[in-house]
Amino acid sequence: MCDDRNRMCAAIKNIKNTWDSTRLLVPGQLQVFNSKLIYPYMNFTTGILPAQTANYSGYTGPRYYVRAFKSLSPKNNGVLNIPGFDRSTEKTLIDIKLPSITGWLSLNKYYNESDFTGVDGDGCLVQENLSAETFSWTSAQYSNVHSNFTVIVRIIMLDNTCAPIEGLFMTDWEEE
Image 1 (cartoon, helix red, strand yellow):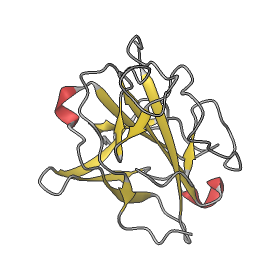
Image 2: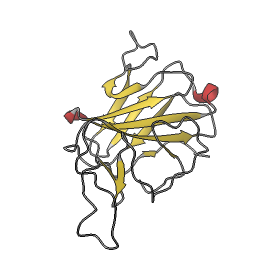
Image 3: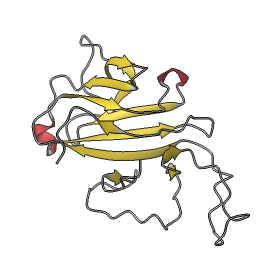
Image 4: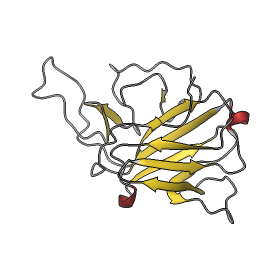
């Protein structure tokens, strides 16, 4: 989670923006803290030296983290390793998107070939290995060749009861 090179804020549409870890979170963002992606809930204004100005204790509502993966070759599937992700809680949602090609495909729902059209909410999960914390996904007939070989992963935590995400890796891609 410490790799900010590929991190993008929810409102940012291009990959060229620079992340500045000294800036406060804006509404809607998740927080990377202690090498984990968490729902922001801590008050850093007291008991922390040097003095801080961040107080996230009153945050509510869904929070987002967006990361891009770029491969060296065309892909319409992959395997994500997501330590800490508990798909059964339904409070942490993970979506995959091929920019300009598909909507947000849900890793929380299984892929169903008979009704898959590549729109928001379509299931893309093919197989999960809970002990290895890996999740195989597909975008079916849609290839990243038309999205500059890029896939975007969006993590949404609905509230501060969500378990921390300890990493996000595309394990079977040769990344640029």
